[in-house]
Image 1 (cartoon, one colour):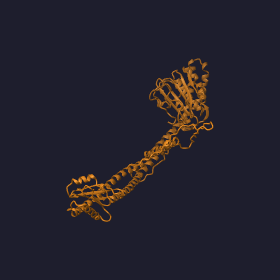
Image 2 (tube, rainbow, N blue to C red):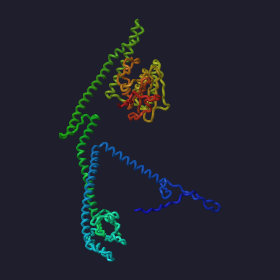
Image 3 (cartoon, rainbow, N blue to C red):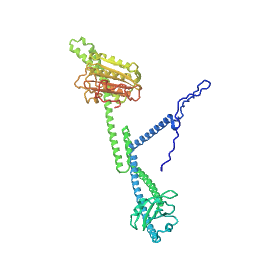
Image 4 (cartoon, rainbow, N blue to C red):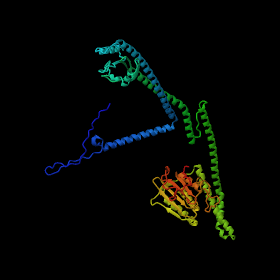
Length: 591
């Protein structure tokens, strides 16, 4: 049915400011009041203006964000929970199965009802045709035929009882002035033209039926079964309303829907209970594994029964016990090793002090020896003793870090001052190696809470390493800072490092070239101690290198001691090295 069209009220378009009527020589202008904030403007045709449209867009954007949050939360729970996935799939599959069964049962019931209705209608039609044959079989083309047809229709209708189980429609195919007679103001259009044509060409005694809408002069149309037959020149139609059958099917469908919903929910509850019995031990095992990974080696699972889950719990407990035992053995071995290194370092100090006194006396008297070889031996003894003392100091420092006894004495310092001090200390070494130290310092202070002694040790190690491997090229030292961090980068243009050596650069006693002599007396522990000192600050010590292009070491420290470092103000790969693939992985302080 076409819906009525409503006319749309259109307000006139806003005009310009018009000139008023001159009064006493003064031209008045109508003031246009600006739209205040918070008011909704309306434009042509009563549509919302810019303010209303803006609020609508903001409300729509908020609704979209809320839907996205809900979707993300639900999807996250879906991915994390096995039980939710099992219950959801059970709901979906059981709903599909119940829906298919419900449609099948409804269809079978509908077919059974319609078949029964058709058989009943055919019996009624056969009885009606026999009655019409008896009453109107010998009629002629007289004026009283109309009355006889009316009486026949009323007689057939009366046989349906007071409830009116059907309507009757009869027509004479030879009559052209009227289209038959029907009961209860039934319109003749209720019988489809297609059915009439089929019955007209059918032989006498044929039965045809179809489903259609029964329309009346008054009242709403209803669906019905239309059964027709003919005897001689008369066509008789029985029209059965299907209101009762529709009510029965609706009741059955609602019952099936209710039973299906309850059945699906019961299946979901059963799936949830069954899945919970399986998932709960797995969750307990996952939680136990997390606590075990966090260092709680005494964590164990409760064993119940003798099924597969109980065997899983026993296997987990056996694994945890073996792991606790092995870790305990490793901790004891590590403790013995650290204690041995510490004890040896302390015990060597006493004889080293005595040897140092004798070596100092020989070194001071080296010019008085007649044999020059003896003087040279005194000089070599002095230099090797200094290196031995440095090695003992580094071993003691490493043992403190291993034992967790290293502490941080932080104070607010300017990183530029520390860099200048360390560069001054190695300036003589750089001149002897033929290298020039180039400083790139910012104009503003780079303040940070650091341990002066440890940071200076890191910088000296980096500078000495750059000078030793710089092949006489320039050493570039860069300092930068941002809101959260400060960084120092030491760049050399020496031999660099070969592929595969990036993971070993901070290992203890590691050297890039084992056949190369240490001309500056290094101990092989400098970079290891530097990384430990950086980790103690909560910072990073990272390296990049490429064969023939040199290397760069970057120290990144947080401005405030104890805060988490999220980034560095300096790049790890030096500028100008386009497309260079880092051979050193970025090693953060916690790795």
